[in-house]
Image: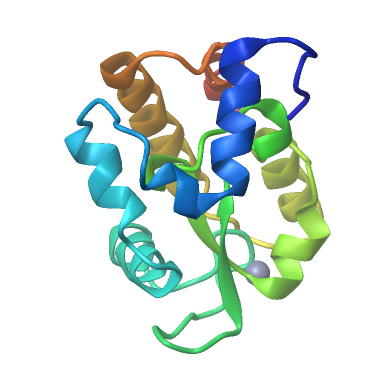
Length: 156
Ligand SMILES: [Zn+2]
């Protein structure tokens, strides 16, 4: 994420994001859903995502067991494209696929996986994009992610 110089709001976000101890002292508007998400640790997020999408890598469908460290959650809309760190933007992937995908868009990576002979979970990617679209409508903001999600939904 590029921070414009002198942009007050974004600079503040950057500072607080870098100093979690300061963040806890700053009064904030109550946001029940995101506040709830903030308290989930990595393992809990992974458990929720696996329960939602199935216990496998979204790309290569290799089985993933809860508690093992061979998998990770990754963002459907990449962070570099403005994708938020919301559970609606997360899917489970094995470390190999996560590393291979890099910043590819979900639609491009689905196509590439199929070209390689894999059977990626296209339906779960589509569901995730729809859920993210809905979450953006409810919470607002995400000006970069919003059009990206819409264009991806036309391609998956
Ligand atoms: Zn995989």
